[in-house]
Image 1 (cartoon, rainbow, N blue to C red):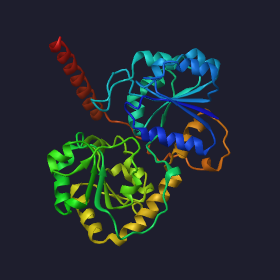
Image 2 (image 1 turned 180 degrees about the vertical axis):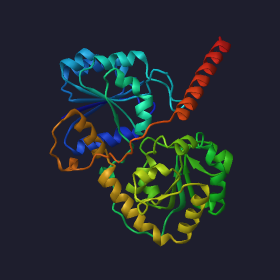
Image 3 (image 1 turned 90 degrees about the horizontal axis):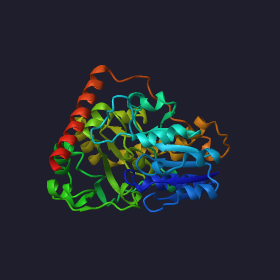
Amino acid sequence: MKILYISSLRYLSSHFLNGWKNCFERLGYGFKYLNPDVDNNINEYLKSHKVDFLFTYSNEGLIKLDHKILNKNQIKLVVGALPYNRFNISFDKHCPLMGSEEINILEKVDNKIVWSQHEPEFNDFFYSGFLTRDIPVIYLPHCADITQIIELRYDKNLNYDLFFIGNLGHKKNNIKLLKTIFSYTDIKKIKIIGDKLWKKYFNIKIEGSTKNEEWKKYYSQSLISINLHTKRQKKHQVLLNDRTFHIPIYGGFQICDNPLANKFFKNDEIIVAENEKSFIEFYNYFRTKPDERFEYIKKGYNRVVKDHSYFNRWLTILSHFDVKYSDIYLKTNIFSDHINKSLDLKQIMNYYIESKSFQFAKKIKKWIQK
C-alpha cells in the first residue's frame, strides 16, 4: 500500500501528520509527505509514482489536484473537509466554508470520501451539501498515536502538579475556573505550553509549542493534566479535542470539562466534570489523593489503545472503500457509539443568524478598508 499525504499544516498540527505517518509505517506501507505550498509538481508525482490513497485537506492541497490523474490511476482520495451546505453557514463563525472550486474537483473524482471530526448530527446538517452531490461524508473523531506509547508506571515523584498544552485565546471562558484552580496550586509546579495570554492573565511562565513536542515527558510527569474546551465545544458538544486521547496514552491523569467525553470513555477511565464546581471538586480531591489516579490512567490508556487510535480511524476509511485487510493492528474497532439525533430548529436558526451576521460584518469591514 502506498500513501501520499498532502498538507501545508496550516490548520492541523504536525501531530496529525506524524500520527498517520507512524500508523502507516507500522503497517509496512509506503508513505510520502508533500507540502503544496512548496511542492508545485504534485500531479507530476502522481503520474510517475504508484499511490493507493491520497490524504489532503480543504485549503491545504485539494485545489491543486488533477482529477483526471486520480481517476486514471484509481487513486482513492480522502479529504479533511470544511462545511458545505445550501445555507452557506458554519457551526463556528470563524470556520470557513468549502470553496466551490474544491467541490467541483471532488465531484469529478471517482473514489473519494470527505471526513469531519465533528459529531454526526453536525455533519448531517453542515456537510449536507456533499451528500446532495453524492460525495460521501464519514465521521472520524480525534484519536491518538499508539505507536509512541510509553510503559505505564506509578511514580510519586512528579515534576509538575498541573500541566496544560493549548492557547488561552479561544478559551477565555475558562479564566474564572483557572484562577480558582491556580489558587490551590504552587505556581512553580504549574507547566503551561501555549500563547502569551497565559502570561498576561496569570503571570505564569510559559513555553511556546514546537512541532514535535514530547508530550509524554509532561503528561506522565504531572499530577493532573487539565483538559479545557471552548464554550461552544462544551455547550453544543460539537467535538472532543485531541488532548482527550493524548493524555491517557502518554500516562497522564486527566480532568476533562466536556460532557461529550462520556461517549468515548467510561466513568472509571477518565474524570469528566459536568460544570466548573465539579471540576474544582475533582481537582482538589485528586490533588490530595494522588494514589487514586493510577487506576484511571491504566483504564484510560487501555480504552484509547482499543478504540481510539489511528489504526481504528484507518479501519473506518478502509471499510468505506471496502478494502480487505489482515494486519494484526487492524483487528480493532470502528468507533460507532453515537446516538442518532439531529439539530433542532432553534439550534439551526442560532447558527444561521450567527453565520450570516459574521459574513455581513466581514463584507462591511472590507468595504471600509477599500
